[in-house]
Length: 290
Image 1 (cartoon, rainbow, N blue to C red):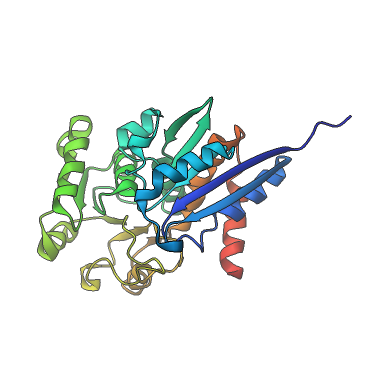
Image 2 (cartoon, rainbow, N blue to C red):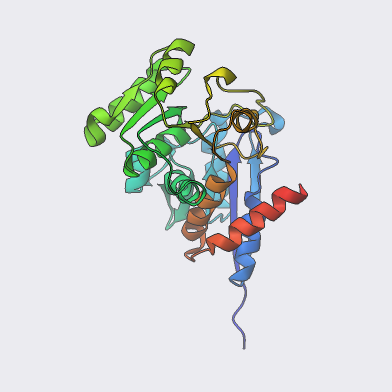
């Protein structure tokens, strides 16, 4: 007698996620492993919900037998007090993008940093990391900050529209990375000064998403010597990437991080190792037909 097919129920909580490719990525990869996986989108923009509904949403998912949830904007930090345990990576980064329900407990993980690094090294393996400017000090920004510094960045300058949030992230990173990390001065002048001597820019804010279109910084601050890495992937070609390409910058689209973090999340949800190259091929195929 053949063993029954294993079924897995997972999902994503976030705002404006209807174009997420995570369901297709996870469900197809699961099929290659002989699993039936259903990936459910829990969009806070539907029915006027917000991060305030997180406790009820986690309770519901856990009671319904979900194996776990991905967590995205604006919930990566708001979810922290609702969890029973954090992985070392999530605790260091102060943000969670993957929650696993196991033994009646909620365990938070973070695959954003490892996912970003996987994609970045594939796209720009010889990138100059002398001085990197990180725009965005939220959940994704925190994870990427660790990843950039672990890659050996000489300096990491962090900017955010909320100067206090940028300063708080610098304070969190300083005990581990010392003087290599600092906050960017407030306003456009501070960002311009940081970028003037930078080798690369990582954009880690929601600006550029379909629901938040536009540029996260003045286009004139981009110059050909600067590489630009984006985290937004719907749309894949954001206003920032278009502007950067036009200025002659080497670029990394947000799809690389999307695939990299999905590979990690798939392992946490299923206990199985995803085929990263296969998932990336699938991702690019989905983007082409969408």
